[in-house]
Image: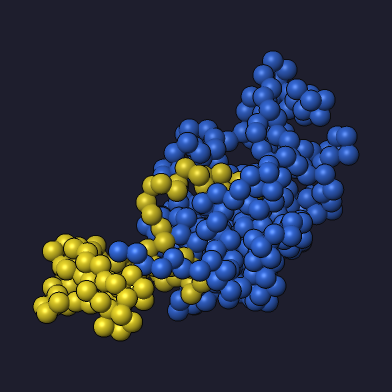
Amino acid sequence: MPPLARRLAEIGRAHAGPGAPAELIPTRPDVMIVRVGAIVVKAHAPGMDAALLAPRVAASARLGGIMLPPADTGITQVEERLVSVWPAGEPVDSGDPDAAPWEAAARLLAALHSVPVAALPPLPPAGGPGRMAKTVAALNGGGPEEDVVRAAAASLPPAAGRTGLAHGDWHFGQLVRHPPEAGEWTLIDVDDLGVGDQAWDLARPAAWFACGLLDPAAWDRFLTAYLDAGGPALAGAADPWERLDGPARALTVQLAAAALISARRKGRQVDEVERMLVDACARIAGTDVRPREPHTQ
Amino acid sequence: MQCPKCRGNMRTYERNGVHIEQCENCRGIFLDYGELETLTRLESQYSQHAPPPPPPPAHGAPAWGAPHGGYHHGHRQRSWVGMLFSS
């Protein structure tokens, strides 16, 4: 276990008891998570601002039933990293994506979006648009695919949509059952929680669907559950794509940029899924770079 | 047989019971009497047997989305699972 992980395990044992075993949980490379019994301890990404994280943690403490409240509202600092402490939940089984709780996720997002921001401590902007801009800026290659993604990024419409409380980085890694096995699904990860265009929280699945990656039936279940729950991001729109189009374009650009960065770093060709994201970027930019195959019968 | 257009040499092909003469020079195709009707009939049978297009999504789709029917059940699922679960 790296030294930082051992320090996180000590913090965890202070909550979970001295005998609890510590385990490093796989996550993003810029974040470290150690589970100690019924507690998880998270070292947030380097450079995270305590003045932004503290109100986010405090807000989650008031969002029980929608977001997982912290085990401790205090934030500590270990080796220049901000550290927060949470109850351990049971993640969605990544080995069985067909069984992912699409309806529960949609209802939780609708409930989160219905919380008035005035009921919470003053929150910073939600993280979605910033993450997209950062990912595109990190695109450093000069190949034709990079040019397509940059052209799509340059074509994105200006921000619009209903502003309110938003998760800021929703995907199925941001959902756990708590308490494990017996409990209800709940949202986790406050790092991007804030005020922004709520349709961005629906934009990842919207982009997956639009790119042809997500089974239209699963997308339909998600969207129907969100609409049935009165989700404010789409309330009053005759066509959900009036609100989804801009954020879904942006997420497609972000996912394509992240895919190219990953492929270039590993020195491999883009795979079929990544190709579909880049093709969608070409359509977004209005330049379909890959000519259609002529019919051969 | 010589091509009526460019006088090139024509070769005979038989495809699904239809005789086709094609010029080796200009690639022009010559059909015997009744063969166009036979091709038309085969074509309409083909389109009758083609699977119907999938129904449009209940809640619409954006203009820049994957071409109609872009999703193919199953074979892509494994390779994009990482995207479902990570930032």
